Length: 335
Ligand SMILES: O=P(O)(O)OC[C@H]1O[C@](O)(COP(=O)(O)O)[C@@H](O)[C@@H]1O
Ligand SMILES: [Mg+2]
Ligand SMILES: [Mg+2]
Image 1 (spheres, rainbow, N blue to C red):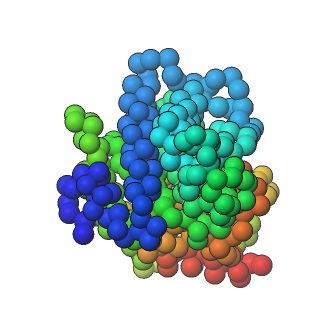
Image 2 (image 1 turned 180 degrees about the vertical axis):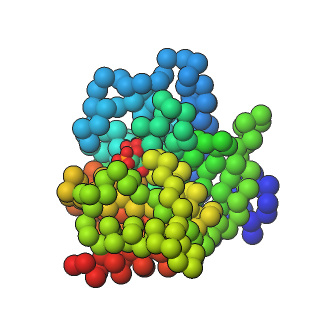
Image 3 (image 1 turned 90 degrees about the vertical axis):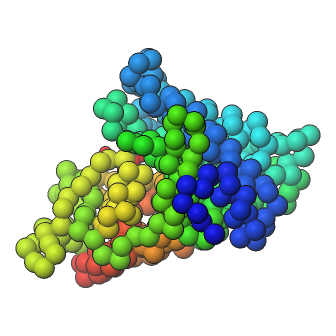
């Protein structure tokens, strides 16, 4: 049972039995994520003081300029997870291929794979706007004792056993689910402890915030253009307010608290949109559905999509249930 101001450590232990495979491994994994989050939080908070702003002068597999904090966050999570030998594989936005973690005595016996976006909202790092980390956890489907394979990562989002994000904003929060609701923990920086501050988070069914990069408006499908016009019309609780931070984690976190819809549609610029299915859309969709919201590619639930590549992109509509259903109706109409 969630108690306000319970520490994250206490919550993990007290809720372990909820988890059908509860052998303590998943708890150790969430604890490792908690530790890496604190390491990254420390770096993010002092970014302007030490020379970790800006790019490393290299591009990642997405063709994006890698920021120094992308690399620092990536290494912090990979090292923390590897050193604790609790995963058999790691997939990251910043690594072309998945990383095999041999585990104790190279026995490949660990049961979980993790996919992550170590630093989300990279374009906001240098301008002191909130950024995040996103993670998604699966049980492997290939036999323990054998090296992990791509198959273990390309599972539908419905198979996730846990997912969450860390938001490095006005305060630092860790929000996650293991399929039993969504809980948010705030870091007390003075003592380095996460406390339960947002028990049982819920997306309001309806809201009045829409989040989309309207700079791409002319390139959007007609259905999206029609929905944006609908959001801007004078009517009962419209026009909605437009809010777009440009950090997926922060935009969805705000909309989960206030009610709203986030969209990164396909466009004539990006045939499949921009966001990555495995370590951005699947984990945010799992959180959203667990909080009573909805997430789709405009037609199909994100969690029912069958992934085919580690870094594949999908169009993303996510947020308050009635708002996503309305956007989907406009998409269907304009087919
Ligand atoms: O600048 P755009 O095209 O609107 O894209 C913003 C989106 O891209 C992202 O920054 C992509 O994530 P990364 O920063 O992890 O690459 C999202 O956080 C954000 O929602
Ligand atoms: Mg991202
Ligand atoms: Mg990123």
